[in-house]
Amino acid sequence: MSVREILQNYRAGMAVYDGCHAPTVGSQWEAFKNEMLEFFESPSLSEFWDVLHSAGRLFWKLTGIPLQLLAWPTVRKHGERYALGGCIRSERNCEGNCRHC
Image 1: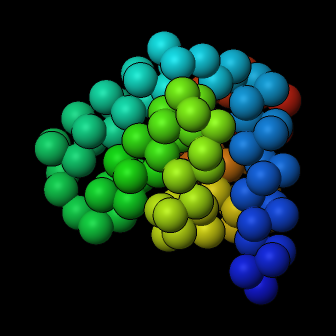
Image 2: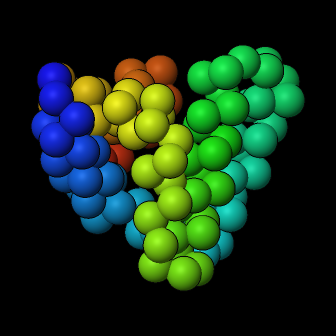
């Protein structure tokens, strides 16, 4: 999958996800805190990128600057998941309340 395709799928997947889970400042703060907890419970490079992505989404919500795109491994992961399954979430983390999960 090319970078362009990954970004297209990422943007489409995040739009679907945000349609089901409104990206408010509060929800982005909660997502960031949850990712930080996951990182401290089980530190890994993958979790680090997820923390950076959630921090970038919070920054995006506050400023309009899409800083989350710097967390490329997570952007790629979400784009690929959306392309393959129609949802950015893993099966393990799917809440089942999104029409694409």
